[in-house]
Length: 117
Image (cartoon, rainbow, N blue to C red):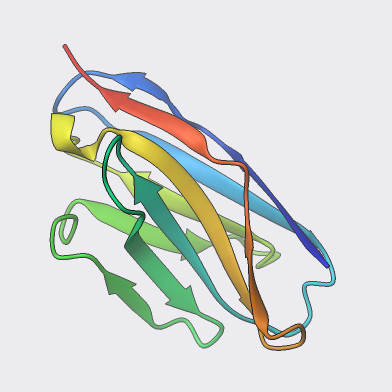
């Protein structure tokens, strides 16, 4: 199994920045992609950013140019650098790992990001 632990959420003013971290442990061999999703109240969970094992990235149109996903040197940690934050970025952010070994997704517990003045 894969365990994911997020950190770095909080309250920030519009225009500010935050960096989320997601550390993976357990059977990390076979993880084909890592991603960040978010879910705002009353809305469906949506993909924010994704990075493949080969390093390719993909972003939601709403965050392009403001957010950046990256991996740490050990590659078990994934980061989401969020700049120029807007109130509409307010949501619970979830870390995701897609395992080709288990043929399923694993999720973190979520971390709250609130953008408000």
